[in-house]
Amino acid sequence: MNPDNRDIPVVILCGGFGTRIREASESLPKPMITIGGRPILWHIMKTYHHFGHRRFVLCLGYKANIIKDYFLRYREHLSDFTVELNNDDAPTFHSRVGTEDWEITCADTGVETLTGSRLAKVSRYLEDAETFMLTYGDGVADIDLAALLQAHRDHGRVGTVTAVHPTSRFGELQVEDGAIVDFAEKPMLNKGLVNGGYFVFQRSFLDYVNDGSGMLESDALQKLTNDRQLGYNIHEGFWRGMDTYREFVELNGLWDSGDAPWKVW
Image (tube, rainbow, N blue to C red; front, side, top):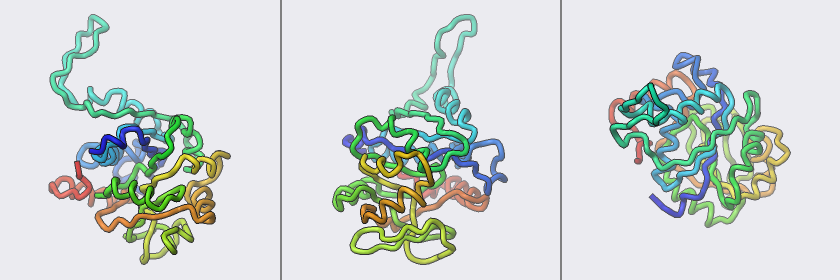
């Protein structure tokens, strides 16, 4: 764990419906669909915490209260406890389970809000951080977040995207001289490099989304690309989005087998 990363906030986009994975659960927001009994959101946060990050800003949307309730009662969900119902005392916990050193801001950014607008709505919670990280609430990877952050610092651009080799359906990235020169959202291609969803940005990136409109991918990131201010870092390891029931089964199978590549903690 790198203590220098404690004050670098991590924005996680958690507003999705998960319409293509309803076989797993029709009653949960997508980031709360479980792998090994824990929400995929928890797995993502554990990865970031492994690299020293403890400040999380969750951009909530669909069924936001489920995510809010999960963290408000996080320790109760995980621990044995004794509660006396005839007084107002807090429960007595019988273990140290559920005591992660996390600071979590749950921000309800609206059900129909687009991804760029979600980031604009939580900009006030980033306070004076000069650098922040951002990812989606539905993908896991054995990503070296320290290497990603170092690559961002080395090239000196406003943003850095993790580039991965595609498994299917994801938007291709065209690269030239260390920068992204084309950010195609989701063409039906299966070659080259695609957006792996783990980003680092300087605070100035908020100027690209401050109008509160548009998709992050087709609006703000396109503008950043046009300015040659989006760099990249290639991740060659495991990376998987949980977008379909097949992927839900695959990720749970890996976890249950004890061979989950993303479990770096």
